[in-house]
Length: 465
Image 1: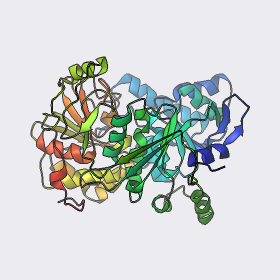
Image 2 (image 1 turned 120 degrees about the vertical axis):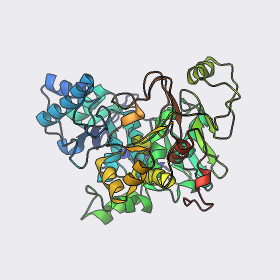
Image 3 (image 1 turned 90 degrees about the vertical axis):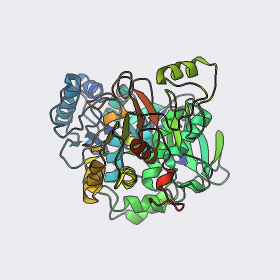
Image 4 (image 1 turned 135 degrees about the horizontal axis):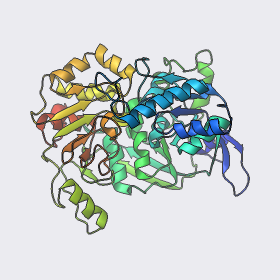
């Protein structure tokens, strides 16, 4: 029987499958952060259970920590308690932990790949919905609830029904200034926030052939925003080149590992529950207009008319109207960072547009690296100086303004263009308004002080002018 890549990974990890019951699925690795792990550790403590295998866990702090220079002083008492609780729990259960100033602290979905922990064919979980990021490596990676995190700690397994599989084929060549972020926003706008419910998405197509690992991670990261369980891309030479020098990548058995990874391809004629084809060759930069990622349009389009309550409520909240153009909408804030777009490639694009330019005088622009490694690389490449000289502010690693769980919040009533993954009501701060976009669009808009395309900064071949 011909199998798709999800079939192959799933079948390789079934511990037991009784008819009409969820499978007992083996989990290769569990990432841990401060927000969703405390209850899981409490479960072990209350049942007098150890962690089954501490080498299959890695913890770091990301959501609740400040990103200002004196980030060790946490003013919010709940955030402070969460961070300290993770420190205490990882010490008690001897779980590997990267704290601030360890040189490896950062957003879990940035740290895992850059250390080479994330590898093709693995099953990876975390108490975080954007665990789908790791699917860029050909891993089956998905978020789980806190109680299930406890089950994985204790048993290395979880109970799960096999998801359906959707194939999304992106074909064509991106125009200058258009990227993977725009492609995934286009998919979500097309199929809706529930369009992939119950499915794992396999991304394929010619548009992925030369796509960097950073871009692939952006693509897979937002799979959850159209309801998918996970998203993944079959591994190839780009994957292997990225992994080969990483700390936890196979060393002596590298060739054997690659041989196995090369088998993780969907067979010709395999079955998919649903298939979608998108041509990106005419795609323009995408920007969200509403209060969920489905509500997004190409930058030169007008906000669509609709009589449904979701649209009406969204427009009331964002203070826009059907028929309005997003282009030239005034802004107050801008943000580049998060597990979606906080990697070195994102910072390079941002700095390239900001170089020898200034952001608008009315703008506040935070640029936050996804990890301490990304921060060091940005410093080595001179990106931090370029960013700060533009009037933007380069900050310390963390989730930052992606969500209002730390000091970095957009003030009520202020409008922000953001490279993050969600634009829910108040997600960036109570009463804040968020427009999702790519790092290039964010940087160009920060310079203009309003929503604009970054096209003017790109040559036809895609290089920055």
